[in-house]
Image (cartoon, rainbow, N blue to C red; front, side):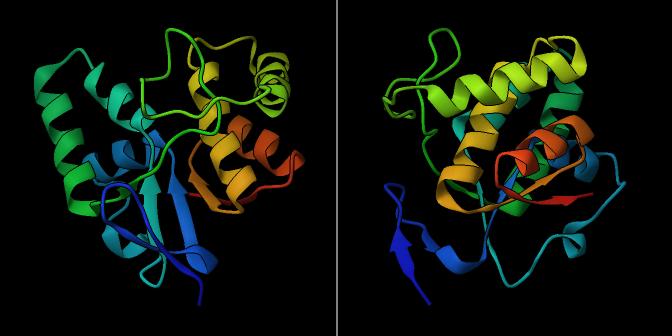
Length: 156
């Protein structure tokens, strides 16, 4: 087993690491899935993107339920592999050539008509692909694009 410690002092089992898309927290908050539906043997992770998307939920009651779902899962937080202006947070994203991110975003835009959260989805997928994490999502378009670029995906 290959184990590392993140900057937030969380331990990750890199052989069994799953990156959770934001919509998984929505499904948990809505009772469509429960914690038992998530891999128990795996390290579960997220990025600042998922936190930001939850924080941008306009309804305060819903936002609170989403943060409770996030807290119950307790994912380790890892940086994104690229930094995108007006999306990424300082110290939470890495500088890169942006090539993979751009290809992912372009494919998402072509597939779903340029949804406004495609930059966020491309950043999430890029983390899964570059680190060989399994992406857990309920978004069929994101799953399709991530798989096309080499990610393992679990569609819930």
